Image (cartoon, rainbow over all chains, first blue to last red):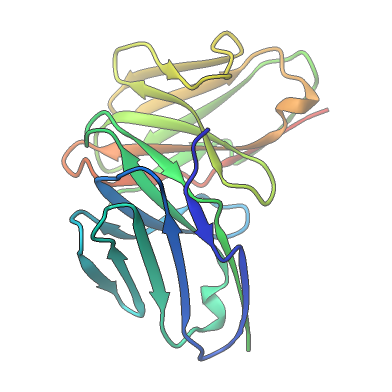
Length: 113
Length: 116
């Protein structure tokens, strides 16, 4: 099925460093969502973006919905060990009540204490 | 708020048997629920979309007679894997769309299915 291009695939960083990951697509999306998944768990919603150009923060997380509606990025500032996990971007294709999410391949984040 | 549960969290079954997985939205009404499958170190692949009271819509390549979906109420959807085979072993995750916040989708904790 269709997927978003998410990069990087994995990151290994030192505690305290900032992290940036992004997603791009050839298709336009009306909504972008960022999720975090811990091993053996379902994804947890981190940030939802509804408008092109929108910049939204949730604690140490900041995400932006690209102007072209074909991309989004997620930044994590001052990383801590509990940030470890897999981060997925997802774009909503179709209308809000009938559309479906298209997922990126995920970015695996490892944080060294 | 926006909690989705799944039961069981893991199940082991013998080849040829059927397994039912439940997905419930605990504190909101979900007009739409989704079923995903995830292989190790891979992304989530949508299997089907179910709307309360109607037939599920399956993604291309997903056998609807093998993966039976029932969305009996606004808080419950079930996935039944019929005549399971080892290749059906996977992590199955459901999600639900809150009818009042239709842009957001919440996921259950997943069900690990192992077919021996």
